Length: 332
Ligand code: TXA
Ligand code: MG
Image (tube, rainbow, N blue to C red; front, top):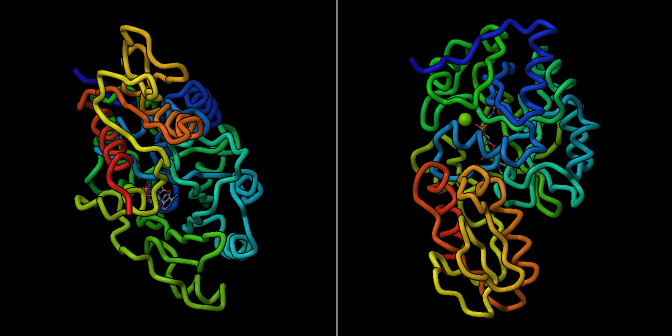
């Protein structure tokens, strides 16, 4: 029999053990007023990688960081006057703000899928709030397998993610989600207009009434991470962080000038300054290191190419290779 994740009532003991599981890098599904979230500590790269693994996503999309209050959001993002205005009006609640990451934030780069921005939301559900108070910021997409409907009951989550997916420690039962529709996502770039990135729980006109002007429209309105044409979602193309250095994939013979992004056993000696995504060939560990190592190598490349060793095209390897091939694609 495959194991089914336990569904627990959100009593203090269960919240304590949920926090302990999250601190040790495991996943906990929890209720919010919009939909159930598949939560991981936003500070632990490997826990965030486990989210992508559990959802069976072929690519990395940026995730929402859930916080207990706007003060916590402001520790990790550049929380400008517009953000403050919107948070005062709609938090806690179904509004997500995409803001520049603070340079010194310890939040996983994988949460942002390599972008310089981070999505933050303070949910209104009491169970979510109690959990966030104990466990700290949680990265959480909707708690469904990629491509399936978002869950609004604990039993939906257990049915979708509970079997044979060993990372899910438990599902906290908060009853039926009051809203049942994902949060509205608003982008607030430093020097650009407030933009509607995904329609959702908070109507656009309510946001515009608070701001006092109309929201800009995202270039692509296909912002649903479950979309099968996911290539146009924000984590996918143009806005993505691309290294300055040229990238070569599936390299097995290195030049002495290469900076190498290795994977698995290295065999002979690699050029000085090379980094290894996972010396043991563990794809979850590799996913956890991908964006930080790409950035680090880009910082030392100085005109040389980043040569990436072959990565198996299975499990999270598919998402890693997707990201790498976009990073290696010809640039405008
Ligand atoms: O109601 C909700 O928002 C639920 C609950 C669990 O909070 N969460 C949710 O997460 O729907 P997810 O991962 O299924 O959708 C997150 C959305 C995606 O459309 C994603 O592209 C966008 O937010 N997003 C996240 N970070 C972003 C970023 N840095 N830039 C642009 N879009 C971002
Ligand atoms: Mg979703």
